[in-house]
Image (tube, rainbow, N blue to C red; front, side, top):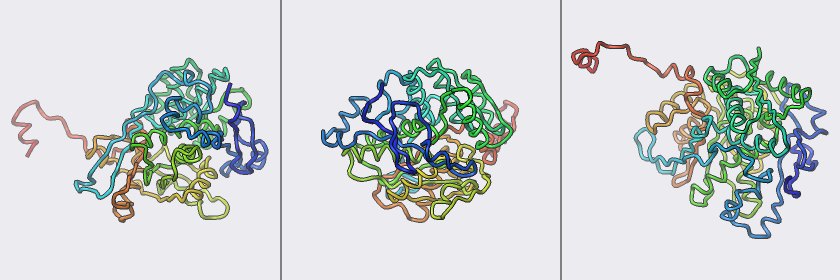
Length: 412
């Protein structure tokens, strides 16, 4: 059903596995996994890069073939019928009413069907399941991945089970239920939901969409890199600012550009900047140390609030290999970035997405953005996903009598 040349490579031990079968973690490394540590044995999909390079395949040819040379599915007709990806890239020329000396682009993935970047992953997971005649998919989620899977499965006639912490935002839970998925709130954290979904996968035989656990999620998310390359006039951006929780979106960004690099399409990688909330920085805080220390997550950016970043090891490998950078931003900086995006550019995004913009603003204020450089900020989810998070920014006016005199008094 799949290209014979595609394989899985374990990011921990390097073992190679056939990609023809449904597979999650490397079975060898997974035996040593500790539930209180990021998992070992996350798999990476490997394509016949040398063959593509030897044929001098062009980006135009890749696109004409619907990128099937770099996708782990046999036919794009198995993808959902919804319009996923190919989201707008907006050029902005000023920050806080001051002209900026660099190029800044905002990639608006709130325009996906369920209003988040996660649709890219869900689409590929759904297509892979369809090609393997699987009709039931489960995921753990803080909300976005769950609402995404629910919507995508609804469009494909597949059954979705979504396990969430009971504290997940009501808007995301509403989406899940409206799309017809089975919502299962748990008394606990995202990590508790994750562990339950894995147990259910083993017991019930469901297909698991969990980020990092399922290698297809990264293969879906990497599509954003193909789009950025094309939207920037077949040029690699100098920097991409990415909101980071469990490390899968940033790995997807890296994987897309790495696929183009190894296929001979591009000759260098962008500098990718990992942006985490100060209150949930377990990924970036452990990048330079030995061992892994967990601090309980406390941030209003629920989509990137993660105690155990499931894709820590792959994300660290990418950041090390391609000289990535990282920083943290406070919840206050996230809220300020959210207000700036809405009031200056007409883009209302959730706090996790605003975190990436907060990272760019911090770099700008510290004069770390090179003049003339091309910079992209990934906006990964709609602000309507979590209205309670922006309550501190709201001053809801009281109603007035519908008279001109009251209106004039108010305007004073």
